[in-house]
Image 1 (cartoon, rainbow, N blue to C red):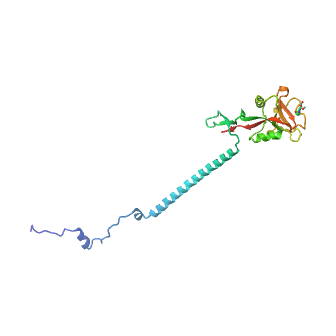
Image 2 (cartoon, rainbow, N blue to C red):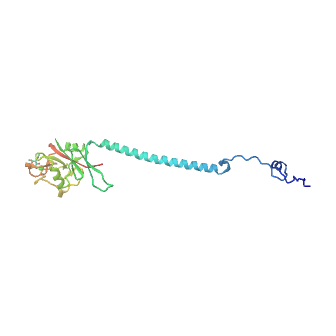
Image 3 (tube, protein in one colour):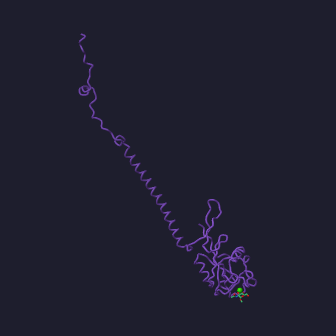
Length: 237
Ligand code: 2F8
Ligand code: CA
């Protein structure tokens, strides 16, 4: 009896799969699955990612375009300024403002600097209109005198034997004085020689020192040829 062996409990894997009636039907070997097959939302995710990528690309292009456009506009502006700028040599001073506001204040070489303006003394003798043209050709105007201090600064640089056109005239001879830059004529800031202005036919103004005495204004005929003084605001860099 001891030699009887029961095999009933022995089961082979293969056998149970092929023979067993209650066992589950054989299934096909599982394929290795890729993420997009196992995840049904994969196309959606892919589409969304592509959309986000495209959006980012569009934003980047838009920003790049704006930057490029700004740089281009700046370049055009600088080119335009350079074209207009006729003074090739400048003398500059550093303005002592706050740290953020520090900039250079410049006058063209050979021009005098006073407060925030530059002055050029022209010894070429021309009539009033030509004198003003000479100044505008240098992006300036004939001298507009605003204060006694300004006139006192200017006269230090003038020749007492000469006369200098300033930017004051009475175009219609009606004693209606006009500054070339549109500054209002202020009676309380005028420096006429005693007895001047004295002649409605003398419609332009010179700064002179008759008999090398004191400097002041005189109305004279606009056709006369005199030296002149040009004035422009300082250039800030
Ligand atoms: O005495 C002042 C008088 O002197 C000259 O005329 C004689 C001036 N004319 C010219 O400079 C052309 C006047 O403008 C001036 O008023
Ligand atoms: Ca006069």
